[in-house]
Amino acid sequence: MTLYPVILSGGAGTRLWPMSREHYPKPLMPLVSERSLLQDTALRLNTVPDQGDALYVCNEEHRFLVAEQVSQLGKKPATIILEPEGRNTAPALTLAALYLVQRDADALMIVMPADHVMTQPQAFAEALQQGRLDAAKGALVTFGIVPDRPETGYGYIRRGEALQDSSAFAVGEFVEKPDLQTAQQYLESGDYYWNSGIFLMRADRWLDEVERFAPAILAHCRSAMKHGRQDSDFFRVNQADFLSCPTDSIDYAVMEKTDHGVVLPLNAGWSDVGAWPALWDVCARDADGNVIRGDVLAEDTHNSFLLAQHRCVATVGVENIFVIETADAVLVTSRDKAQNVKAIVNRLKAAKRYESKTHRQVYRPWGSYEGIDAGSRFQVKRLSVKPGAQLSLQMHHHRAEHWVVVKGTARVTCGDQVFNLHENESTYIPMGERHRLENPGNIPLEVIEIQSGSYLGEDDIVRYEDVYDRVQEK
Image (tube, rainbow, N blue to C red; front, side):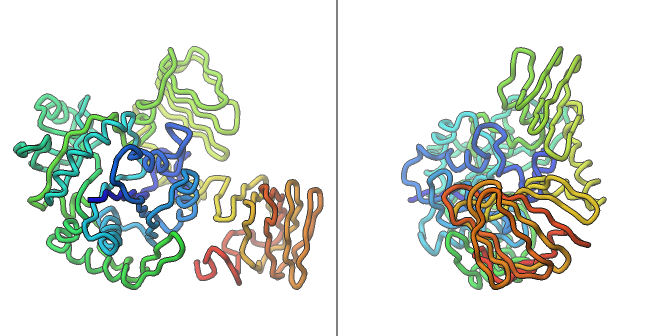
């Protein structure tokens, strides 16, 4: 049976703010290595034989970021299924299973969240071989992480009877996050594992169990796939059908109810990197117990996580603190309170501040833009357009724009005129005029954009044509 990686790229990772944000979340970030967590997940199974192309499930908002990161690995996805809005993991997996059974009736799925870390991927690959045998017989396999401490931040799985001719166990029960005393008892008993959220099963078996325990999820997902459409590497599910689907996790919808669940112990240096302390745990530390990234000067500083992205960060005479500096926000917290960062994100959302959703640098399918300065009736941005890429043909009701080319060559459409601009040349786009910016060259195009007008919001865009199919998007 061919094994198909199913990589679920969802969740905002709010406890890793200010680095992880809604429009550029944790799976897309290089937190542990030079690659993003999603890329590390995609490479985790490189040594596993009899493997098909990976299938990704992600939010519509992140589609081009996911596609680009997969492309950077030199891998072609089976497809990237786009969810118009998250409905938790059970619908996401059901979409993937429906897609796969149409192409391979005997497909095996290894289901992996895109935001986990494994420091020993070979141990995971070896555990997979046993799991494949159990899954081929119809078992729904979940991987239980062998605990090395009494952890209160994870759910647990209690193992039942050992299976014959296997190192797996029947699932006794799933239990919620315990208090410290209970977690210590779990550790000492040896019968409990951390719930990893990683699964291995036949696609058709999953669909049978969903139909048995969560028929509404299957019905809405089936309709969403039937009325969806393939768009290059993307599969766009039908929005109305999918948004009517109930929200539920794989555990609650099926795994806690099925009599086919088994748990396979795994010891592979796993972490879900759910918050800054978890990241500190898995990163290499210096002689003072510090994790240091970027331009940091640490004097008499111990057991801390210090990250600087844009400025020099200096600490003197402190310990057990986390300092996270980005272009537009700085987080300072003690290690024992770092789990509570989500409270700050909630306050930002309540105040409708952009820092909960986006960074100062915002990625688009054509490249990115970054805010440089802003004031009353003006705003300055730096645009970076990838070779061969183009912005939509668009118009603004409330602002005019000046473009100055600082690197590369720009092809400009302004009304009925189409012309090229080179370095140190500029042009003016009047308010209400149709316009487009393109990069016809082989190097990135860098443009300084000065906006002026009564309203400068990103929603003041009327799109007429767009190669990225955003004309109808709100």
